[in-house]
Image (tube, one colour):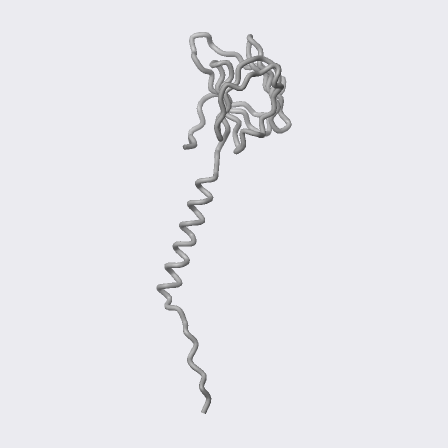
Amino acid sequence: MSDTAAPIRPSPVLLLLLFLFAAVGLSYVSFRHRHDYVTLTINNEWRIYLMGEDRVDAVKFHIGRFRETRRDNRHLWLRGEGEIHWLKNVIRVHKAGVYFNHKMITRFYREKYVNIQFMPDGKVHKGIPRHRPD
């Protein structure tokens, strides 16, 4: 007579619960780390949303021309004029306006902030993005 025990099989309810907890955990982690954009506030006039970017460190600028007044993980506040590089795009900031890859963007003087969305492919949209990050 052999002494083999029947294999222990987990119940289907336990497997279902483990699957659900894993799915919820993975969804939470991916949602928590997903950023829709990085925001640049320049000279307290321009609020530029770099769409599809999730790192403030991806924004490069000349330290002598801009002064960084504040920074967090999704927002960068700058004062000054000059060029800012993001991916393959160039943002030029002047008193008269902002250029994005040679496209002039102006503002109305009665507006406190101009909200602009810059896309990685060079497209420009005015306004605040619909989905705001935390």
